[in-house]
Amino acid sequence: MPSFTWAEGVDARFLRALDGDSLRVDYGGEVLEIRLIGVDAPEYRQEYSRKARDFSRQFCQGRTVHLEFDKDRHDRYGRTLAYVYVDDRMLNEELVRAGLAIPLRIKPNTRHAERFKQAEKQARLDGRGFWVKGGLDMTPAQWRRTHRRK
Image 1 (tube, rainbow, N blue to C red):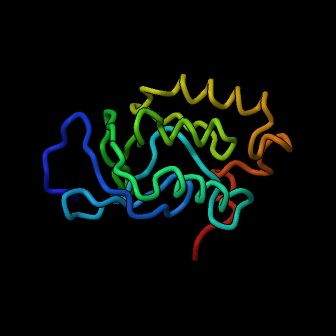
Image 2 (image 1 turned 120 degrees about the vertical axis):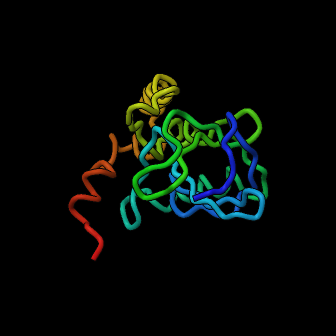
């Protein structure tokens, strides 16, 4: 766990995209694993997983990212929960808008849930990402349940 006091948000250096909704960043010399709040991207080996990961990497590559926090700062796996911004664009929202993630509302971190819902509506209307074929065959949560890691 980070040994600093959380402010409303912090800037960090992007290191890599682990998948569409998980990143590694450097914050003051400490490597943090970030889980994007409010969205669920396809899992490893699931359809569109590489496109989601590549989107996140390209969005953040070579950039300083701003991490905005909500009520819960960490998930049960110890990952830091954040909304990730590059300039004034939020990665979480842009993934949904591109049709590469679905909204995932987990209380109490719901500050931007309505934005994500609207982004999904627009992605569906525009036929972006996996919406070009009507959506994913399985949600990422369904995929995780049927493809458990050994």
